[in-house]
Image 1: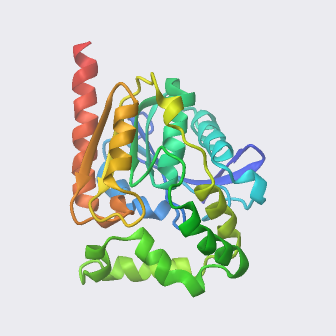
Image 2 (image 1 turned 90 degrees about the vertical axis):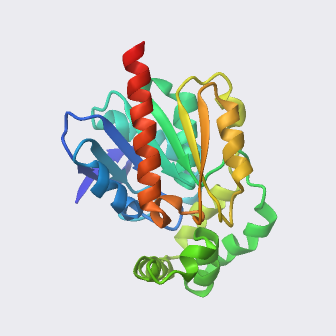
Length: 272
């Protein structure tokens, strides 16, 4: 198990692949941990250095107080992680909450990025705040066990919830979420009370790819399209029969989308 001290908090991370290869940094969703990118690790670690980490307050990383779980602090953690590992530039890929962080890194430290990829995410303030607030309150009070079915509906699409092929992964993550303690509610609080980052993205030239799940119960395709429109070099792609956890639900399809994205940027850079 590897840890790096950032902003007085130990962050857990896993580091795969050749150390001199192009770097991919993966940032996970709320209610998950870095394991949600296991299929991306398996696919890309032969040709890339792949780093996955747990946010403070989640997974194996150090716990933190409510006031230190906001998106700005988590973004500063991500920046400190990249710099602390001696990475000059990387492709930063985030699913949902990880996408909130990815966009803020792109806006505030574009010098660290080859590109920014957001999956099942949004650049805007939470438009379902009133709908999600009772869930957050429940999480803060009792943890996730009593509301795990609600979390599963939010985090996965209809196809994944009903698929026998996805049953093993579905059961794994359901069991994982059931065990989440009340502290996860503090992280959720800052997810729904985040500010918009779209205004910060104006003029950003870092290539940004926004990937939306066709069956996302949390965020609409329109929110991904808005991200792509906010930057100079933005694109949006939709993955069919995928929900909010698109990187996990449709790993093969997402890996192909990422491959094309990396190749496109390499060709573009070589022509400059």
